[in-house]
Image (cartoon, rainbow, N blue to C red; front, side, top):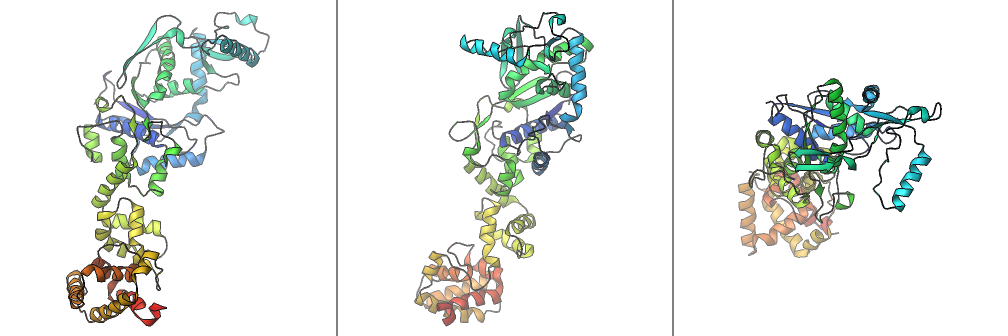
Length: 476
């Protein structure tokens, strides 16, 4: 589908690789990807690695890995901004030659003095345009200079933002910022505009903390359109930021804020985080659970709200529980086995998933719930479990072991019938027998249904664990 300008929709996600893939960045990536997919357009990835000191290969790898884990695929290999410095400088020189930019010879000391005066007079901190109309011949021979954009000083700039609505800024409020530094390197503001144009980006969907940047970037776009044509204004959509539960901007103090932490530490499935991020600031009626295919079909910018959304870990956990119940058992077994490490058999975990999934809200909880399957005898007991194994309980376990040993059909139905019959014989409720059984079989007081535990452990292992607690050796 074409955009309003008749061109194919092209969106981009442009992270700076100075750390992990932040939850806010992941949502921005998701919204860009969905918008492009919904409109039959192209989604592109640009790595803004011009800050060479802080950008690392490890961060680049983690960002790409996180995007891939969320299932966000791109239509071209990533573009690296650092590879394009020559092109950025070329545009700066075009602007200079056409009179839309100028050389500024102000020294760092002069600029600091200017800022000090502005602070003292409580004036806005912006460049005073001292070299805008001066002749270059006034500068000392061979003096270093930066290239600054000649921003219009009269009138106003209006953006019809797809999320924020109509936003107006007086041009006099925008300073003549630097395009090219004295060492010839481009600034972020220039690089972004040039890259967006060269990549054919039609829609810029990003956090509303970049809204001011749009008013600084448009003068470059419009100047280049005058110079060579073919530089249309992009469609802007500035999305409100994500806040923590306390209403403050989401940060590390609110807990995990990186995608990899939710995957590795919190045990969240990618489809759950995909769905949760989709619903952070975008909605379709009362729908909470939305599949990837439905999201592509339904997503558009008119569903994005103007207010910041609040990150609610409990909602994410509940949603994750839903997707765990929906997930393939073998896939979950593989994820759990990776968490548990050596000794975790995927075949047995797969068999256990139907009884582990109903109560679990994370892969971590699945792993905790499955831990009893791979414990070695003698089982280490929790304090509560040990408290259930008094002398009477051990005596009952000894009697139960004799009855279960005679069981030829190691099935849920047969084991339940035998255990209930024994409980009735002892004139006990089933719980009075089941809890010591659970302690003996798992070393804990929580587990799947006790008969599921017996079936999963198998006859030999089950009897060995019960006997370890019922026998004299188990009493020591």
